[in-house]
Picture 1 (cartoon, chains in turn cyan, green):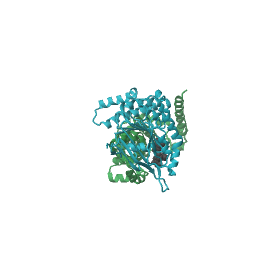
Picture 2 (cartoon, rainbow over the protein chains, first blue to last red):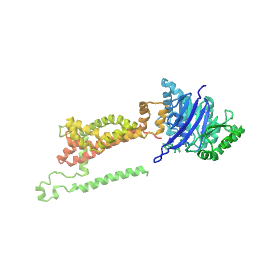
Picture 3 (tube, rainbow over the protein chains, first blue to last red):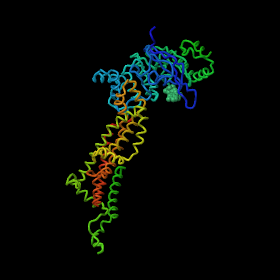
Picture 4 (cartoon, rainbow over the protein chains, first blue to last red):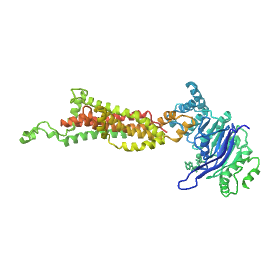
Amino acid sequence: MQPKFLHIKKLSKSFPIKGQKDPLVVFENVNFSMDKGEFVCIIGHSGCGKSTILNALAGLDVPTSGTIEMKGLMITDPSLDRGVIFQNHSLLPWLSAQKNITMAIACRYPKMDRKNIEEKARYFMEMVGLHDAMDKKPSELSGGMKQRVGIARAFAIEPKLLLMDEPFGALDALTRGKLQDQLIEICDRTQQSTFMITHDIDEAIMLSDKILLMSNGPQARVVEAISVNIPKPRNRAEIVKHPAYYKIRNYLVDFLVNRSEEIKAQLINNTISDKDFPLVIDPFKSSSSKKKVQQ
Amino acid sequence: MTEKNKAILLSISLFFLLIIVGEIVTGNGDRSKANMTEYEILMGMGEPEAHVPGPIEVGKLAIKELSHPFYDNGPNDKGIGLQLLYSIGRVMAGFFLAVIVALPVGFLIGMSPVFYKALQPYIQILKPVSPLAWMPLALFVIKDSIMSSVFVIFICSIWPMLINTAFGVMTVKKDWINVSKTLEMGSLETAIKILLPAALPTIFTGLRISMGISWLVIVAAEMLVGGTGIGYYVWNEWNNLDLTSVVFSILMIGFVGMVLDSLIAYTSGFFNYQE
Ligand SMILES: Nc1ncnc2c1ncn2[C@@H]1O[C@H](COP(=O)(O)OP(=O)(O)O)[C@@H](O)[C@H]1O
Ligand SMILES: [Mg+2]
């Protein structure tokens, strides 16, 4: 059998607490997988460990136990195969937008000559509609523009897996909408495999093939994997008319408002088992699979 | 009137006020033979003697000295410009030697917690030592007064540079380090492309402090070892009881110190960045 594109097995993370014997277990027994070309979002309340998981995927953070495999190879260190877009853009403020991107390209393709690197940078700046702002420093750009440079930088290294930690979290609604549309278009076109953290349910439905739901921490789990069977390419105006849209949306809202906390309590009381997590659920097709969780 | 103009006006008024008050306090106007008693004249008080000079007297000397600042009539009679150049040269030599040592070591300390912990006690003990306390040792080992002054400048300017470099490197934003990690940069590449530009503003703060201290210390060092330099000049004029020259050199020391400081501040402007 061919190994999965991305396979996370029994991942956990704990932090020792000063003066206490037992450590703080942020999450445990986290299992999920991802296919090539898939767009996966992960949703859960603040503090359940989403960023920790993403950093482990990036190789920036070491999990306490469990393994992450990409095409059968263990992930232990950061790599140019995995591009990261951080929440607060993390552009280097002393470099112009263009230099931020050319620096990344030069790291990815050490043998490429200056001219080709600059051409490539221009291409990706154009992709996010920012070719006019090439020579500006990050401090001269608006929040949305900075995030777009960050996106261009991540795409420019053409990673096998793109990781995004609430990339639009700090932006106003209007800018966020624009950037989401842009991201949808780029991801559809490039078939970029993407793992993204978001707080925004509509954003998750718009972009995802699969949405992972996390119960509340501590001792959080990835409880369910929601299939989003809405044809692509999607657009904001059309998607709301699709019958699956509100089914999925209501399901997610219910999970965040009620069930994420209920499941946490049930796990602590041992009234449910996390043996089969994450349960694969398509809210549009069935309500039967949902019962399994509530048994 | 804008704030700036008000400040300029106030500054100028203060200047004239200081001159007037200076003249009155030093009381030079009364110092003529006409209003002295015969006894005082007999005691030689009418002759030129040591007294705190008034601003006008200092001004006259300044014009005289600055119209040919670089003359050289032997060891005890050199122009003030020449003396200042000696001092500046020593400060620069010591300062740049310190940069060569402090920057790499600062990076090492900033990048490696092991080095940080290992070197911390040495820095803590050596840092508070007055640079002049090194002078006897330096004179004995180096056996040359000029090089000893350079060494004293080196030893006093190295600490602020070292500490600021290490601090600047240590406090580089984690996000930027993560960028270098995800781009698979090695240690040297990270140091040059990420840490150095990120830490430069902090490093420059250290350089500025070091330069300030160096300029303070060189005057004292040259008073101690003699020969040449502005410190020796001041001490020599004090021995001649020429207080006018002493006051004039004080002003010149201040002026050069200001220029050195602005030079570094100006240079650091090119490496500042805004987040
Ligand atoms: N260095 C640390 N020491 C102790 N606890 C930590 C540390 N880093 C993160 N945590 C805890 O881990 C939990 C998960 O953090 P994070 O992954 O940022 O959550 P999320 O991104 O889902 O909001 C938080 O509750 C936080 O308190
Ligand atoms: Mg987070």
